[in-house]
Amino acid sequence: MLIKNAFLASTALAVALACTAIVPSGAVAQEKTVMVGGAAMYPSKDIIDNAVNSKDHTTLVAAVKAAGLVETLKGPGPFTVFAPVNAAFAALPPGTVDTLLKPENKAQLTKILTYHVVAAKVDAAALMGMITKDGGKHTIKTVAGDTLTASVQGGKVVLTDAKGGMSTVTQADVFQKNGVIHVVDKVLLP
Image (cartoon, rainbow, N blue to C red; front, side):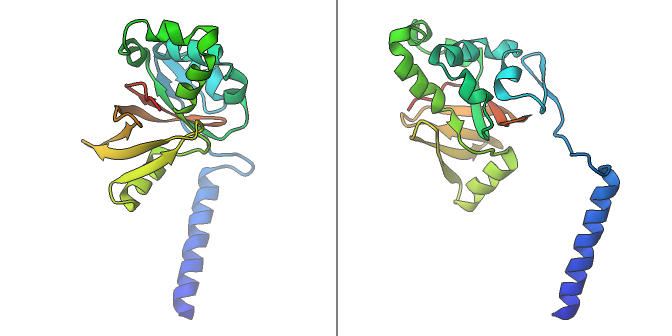
């Protein structure tokens, strides 16, 4: 047992030294910058400051503004946002987005948008681990207070909403200063 503990301690020290050699003293390892909607997503910026530059998320950004959620998503978080692309909003029944953006529908819009947000930073590896640990399906509690069910289909994470609608993560791990974005192809409905 003593030899095993000494081995583990020396292995941990070797890993720590290797990491120190890679990351200079006082520096912080950064997640890499990726492209979303033709724009660089900088890990040093918050969710809103990055999202406004994605040409694939103009509808989402307009909805976040209409719902009054800008300051929340600029906050410290951490947040995980399953961010529907413009085509996901366009796939809703005609007139749905225009109706949701009206001031009198702010509560409904807020409910839908916060259904896409988790109050934690959950990267793809962690989510896949939770799905595996839970036997192929993992329930996620959203900021809206409702749940999504995550599973893996065809090697991709699929989210199932309360109405049985399914959305696939098309781009994972877009790291932000206050969380992570996973781009999805459908709007999820509570």
